[in-house]
Length: 201
Image (cartoon, rainbow, N blue to C red; front, side, top):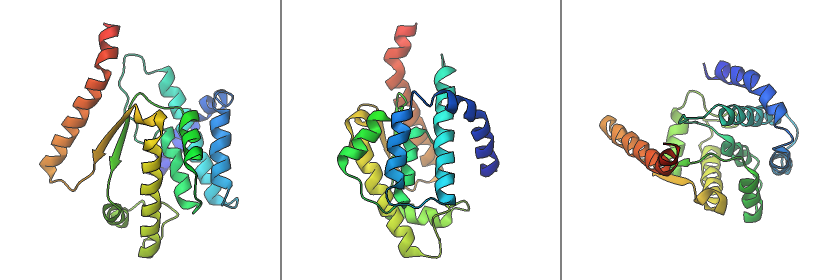
């Protein structure tokens, strides 16, 4: 169950999050400042702060115990930016650039990019759609999808993310097509890591 999984991660990650507060204090301050600019404190705010704690705590765990391992993370700290999608605030390029500068980043970011129409269709099909989305309100869903595309396109243009970015166009593949995409991504990851792996040998 995704909710139980998140709760377990939050509990496990919490001590590591507390231990890294000083290290990531500027990132946390900047992120919360951007988020609260156009948002009242509410249950949604608490849920987003829990998500930020979970992402940073899990990142810290993996940073400490990732020796000789390749770890794939579905939602790393960069996904903290997702909370900005629902604030309906506009962010200057300089603010997003500072977010990426302060952000603890992995060695490689895989950006699965899709059209607004594809995102809307997949959102409507999800059984666990974000709490902020009312799937009965198509106009609102499209607005949030457009906001998400604009925000993440802005994020990946920042200098700090461009140098470690792999963009994957998310198309509607047949089942055998997915296997080919997975193989291509896996090979790109290994190629990216090859110089490092060579040094370790």
